[in-house]
Length: 122
Image (cartoon, rainbow, N blue to C red; front, top):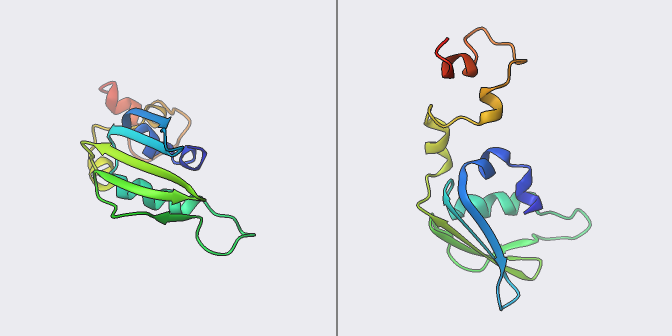
């Protein structure tokens, strides 16, 4: 989860994000809406690195689809499950879905109206 913590847009786009340790000592991560499991698998592969170790620390243990992916992260199995994924491209293209922090940021200077002005009808 620490590897995903830097991806605030990705994490905030997921509803009902849960994770638990299974009986097989693997980790199970499940969410509703948000990106597909293949997108999350790619983010994990990008962020989990050790410069002192050669080779990839994250390997796929099976096919990665929008609904599910199985990874091996440093010998620990991870099962990712997306329920009703929205995919990142579709999420970014929807004007109605804005991060609350961005919408309420009054310090950002822009030539156009601020997102909070649009939300408040200004």
